[in-house]
Image (cartoon, rainbow, N blue to C red; front, side, top):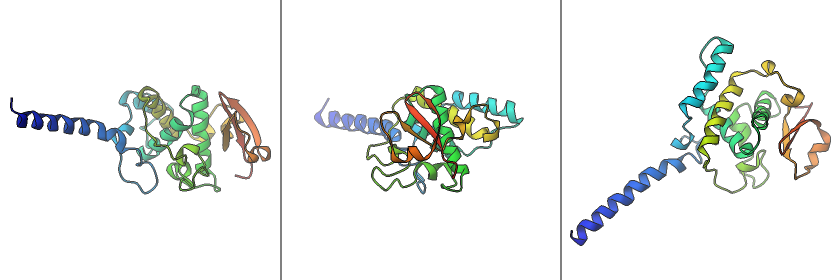
Length: 202
């Protein structure tokens, strides 16, 4: 085999690797308001979503009508904020996001709530959105589970939840910090490493 043939084959091999890897990173910026690029990394696992969708159909009597963009943004918020938390903790973080969407004190869409003030370093609403670190999903098993949780949350209205006042929460923080705003809010519960609060004015 000639040197030219070896070089050609090497180029084809490298190009193939790039084509495989590229979609996994294309979704990193696609969830922010105004973005139009969606990477395959955010593609939900059909089985996980069907599980949540089936629950929704059994409850509402029809197919899920939630926006795929809302599912994706909510799932990313839960993943980057609470992927290491127990299931109830993941759901509670998701409920905080949706409670803010329902409040007039915050933006009126899932994506805008999650990425509110993301242009202000370390001053955004959800730390992952402005910590300067790339938002790359690496734990696909957990991601698939969270996608199902996100769709379930979006298809169940606040009035349908059968939980304590924890599910009225509008704020939370990790147990290793003490934010100044916590003393002004009502503690609603603790799950895993997160403490949850409700803002009656929200």
